[in-house]
Length: 336
Image (cartoon, rainbow, N blue to C red; front, side, top):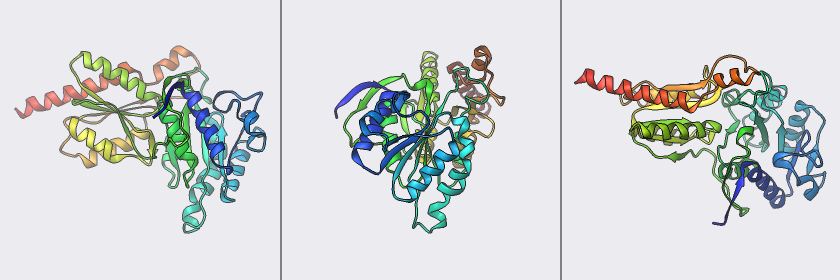
């Protein structure tokens, strides 16, 4: 397989480019996505494909998503961009009550194959209304698929799958990862099926489950734990809906300990659902309670020093993993 080293930004650009080439039904729309103002994943695409395929829109999230859903119903494959995830609430009705319900309300006769790309600015000191990770909102909506890649390879493969999926897909990009580099298959046919987690690092003592930027913190924590004699397995969910429950359960059944880490707030976050699944499916097999490490339940501070104390860190994740091992050891001593 022909691969090239590239940033996540370039991998996303390549996925969009190849989708536009592959199918005339694909088009992009959003604020400032066309040249000369375009930056990031859409740069250069309006010059190559023209304004009919890459549409600059007014600053109206409701208008962007409403137009995209209408186009999808009419048989097109729109890829709409909501520049900052915090603003997606303005278009919530179109997503929650229109796009996500069409398949059900038409008995499968009509679908909404729309992809919504949005970006999370967590960790960039952009303040309380420009840095939220709101993926848990949409996990709660039947009919929506939620995707959060952690590597350039996954970004290209998952975005390609989302664009050609029959259901509405929320594709969440992390700004802090856009400059990350990695090998990416460059041929147009490359895609990654939705709903397949990936084991980024094998281990035997504890499973660390994450997605997006959290995967990199989890890998750093695993490296620290290895120096302490603890073997940590890192599972990258890649998609939150559909959730690869089988891979998560299989890993935790082997290690008997689990830590879930994410940038979304910990309270009622994605980790809560995963912890509930593990507790129900592996009741009696777990050696320690499931640990969660998420953002603290406060509005995001604009001051960098305060913001840094809000989000998970490799140190917090490693400490949570050590607690699970210590709890397990204590239980073993009591049984002995």
